[in-house]
Amino acid sequence: ITGDFKATSAAVGTYDLTVTDTAGQKGVCTGCVSVSAGPTAPTNLVAVATSSTTAAIAFGPPADESAPTFDGYKIVVSTSATATSTDPGITVTQPADQTTPASTGATVSGLVAGTTYSVSVTATDSAGTSPAAAASFSTPYSTTVTLNVAKSQVTYGGKVKIGGQLVRFLASGGAQQISGATIYVVAKANAGAKLQIFRQLTTDSKGDFSATFAPSANAIYAAYYAGKVGTA
Image 1 (cartoon, rainbow, N blue to C red):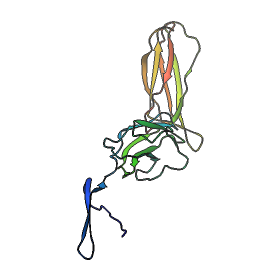
Image 2 (image 1 turned 90 degrees about the vertical axis):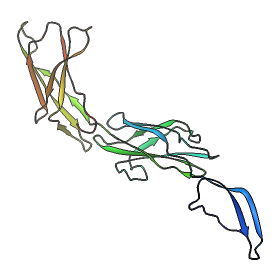
Image 3 (image 1 turned 60 degrees about the vertical axis):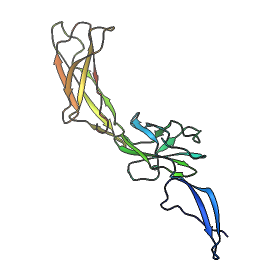
Image 4 (image 1 turned 30 degrees about the vertical axis):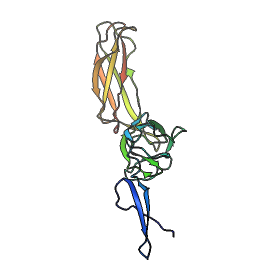
């Protein structure tokens, strides 16, 4: 006699199996059926953009993993939170050994700047597949900031005007001026001094910014854009 036993609603645990024939005779197999829910979801999932086109993913093993065979993890990176496979053009690289339920991670490349991505990680063992651990991250735009000075020399005590422009590079090619962004003019009193914020400026509708001030003797000035993940 052959047949299938399907645990559709049984709780996790070990069960006896009783088979009764048409004459009413019974055969009992004690503790021969084990029901497992599979692993729990991977823990402590973190996903962070490391550049405008790359990201790093890290996570821990399932908190409850008791199956004799651990098959590994599946990582999905997509612009859709409900995707079941990684988007085309994106490469997810995992360590070679994925057969032990240990803390691990992955690197992701082929991303698009200024885009929000969803990440899901599942664990699979001989008893099944875990629920997904989920996270999201946004890639920053690739930007450049220029800084120019109106005149190369100024009499001590006089004023000088500096200015520049902030642009971001588009995935489709070309560049776009960034308006309403914060530019920090930083300064050192001399080459060996600590860097300090000297001015905080805001770019106009064309991405331009400027400031007029009396520079200190021997001071060094520069412009810095910190950026903001998910926007410009």
